[in-house]
Amino acid sequence: MDHAEARQRSVSRSPVRNGGLSASAGEPARKRRRSAEAFATVSGVVLILSLVPLTGVLTVGCTSPRDSQSGGATDATIPKTPDGRPLRPVTLPDLSQMASSAQKQIRDQYASLMQTVENRKTPLLDVSSAYGEMGKLLMAAQYADTAEACFLNAQTLDPSDFRWPYYLAHLYRTQGEIAKSGSLFQRALQLQPDDVSALVWLGNTYLEQGLADAAEPLFTKALALEPRSISARYGLGRVALAKNDPRRAVTYLEEVLQINPKAADAHYPLSLAYTALGDSAKASQHLRLRRSPGIRPADPLLTDLDSLLQSPQTYETLGIQALDREDWTAAAAAFRKGLELTPDSASLKFRLGTTLNMMGDAKGGEALIEEVVRGSPEYFPAQYSLGVIRQAQGRHADAIERFSAAIQHRPDYVEAHLRLAVSLRRLGRAKEALSHYEQVMAANPQNWEAQFGDAMALVQLRRYQEAKDKLTAGMNAYPEQGVFAHGLARVLAAAPDDHVRDGQRAMTLVQGLLAQGRTLELGETMAMTLAELGQYDRAAALQRDVMRSAEKAALPAVVKRLSVNLNLYERHQPCRTPWADDETP
Image (cartoon, rainbow, N blue to C red; front, side, top):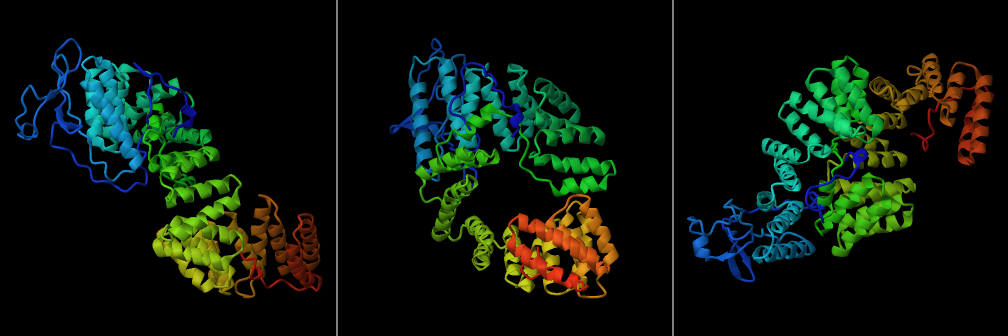
């Protein structure tokens, strides 16, 4: 979401109330059925909603089910406005798969709509608003067909209200009807020409249809109206790519990341732009960082839809959005509201537990996640998260149990395989760890952590030549990840295999790393390298310096470990152990 565009937009007629988009994220897909009946049942009576040309108010006509199913609707049974324009019949969809709270909300709103329509004294603008509000609720619940009928009626009754073509445009967009969506965004912009959200969305629809020339002025105008808009910049960057202007694309897309480094969707087009410019290093870097969360304009109307439906899924969605903003308090509040409706929800308990952990309540968060694991062992995210907690506590046997359970319920869970491999190595089971690293790399060859962990497992297995080759390959593939160069320097300086060691190359690597910053581990590696080159006095002096730093940092275990190599250097002996068994990265 384009948080830099958090300005409020004015809308024609009345302010928007109770809105939000697809609050049922994560909810199982429901079969939708479109009623063939052109009537609605209210209090057991079958009604056809008829708008007849009588002094600008509504009347309701009645018919029988047999008449409505005959397929030969007459002028008397087709809903119309006072000036004869047809309206769509609105029937309540099947709500049986929804949460009871959401069912009640929709039924109550529908009853209110019927009451408004049946009242002969209701002004047409109020009827339009009633249809529109019903459409918003149905759109939030993902009942597209019925929502469409409501919005079409609202628009027919009040063509001057910006909201109804705008919501219709989004409804068609989510259904993949891009051309229809674009036409409705055009209509919305006729009503509010300076609406930044509508400008960006229309530009997006043009880009999806390959119409870069038509999209460009829309993004340009949006950026002029909102100079910090990342969605408009993102659009202009994609326009530049489409028009074979990679330099201009880089300018806009890099600006997107400068304004909002979390706008990860910009990385993929940036990789394409740098590829076109011949900069393969930057292209590869951005390709690895690509994600697809979407870059949307700040959009109060869609934000309204996000919070409209009173269901567990709505509150879960709102909580996730708050987590994305790092608003832990709002996230926790949303998840708690969801749990009030469904106290046994594994996903809501898990997310609340995660949020509590982020808020510093590690004990409370852990307790909730443990509760989910006990009650819903098949909920693999909780198994994984509890494994992460156990791993951080150094309880690797417990962590292995949790990661294994997560993989049992989701065999392709890459993160669980990666974490499982780490705990296996910590317990000296490096050979088992290799198979999990291999699964991660097979699923994602660009996962550098798996490649590095694979090399470290080979070190633990004393397969130093293979480890050297893996580290060298990783250093070349991921030059920005210094762990490969550092790991390779250790192996070259201290491996017990004479065919693997290369003190001079190790020194070159360490000196390059020192230029980027100094750490205790790097100082230890430099001492190993000096000893390998026969410079034992310098190695011992440096090792003492490193030990003093470790003492100041209150790291007694590290001091004890460092003293082992200091004794070697003082006796003019090199180190032949790149890492102790319990300290391999």
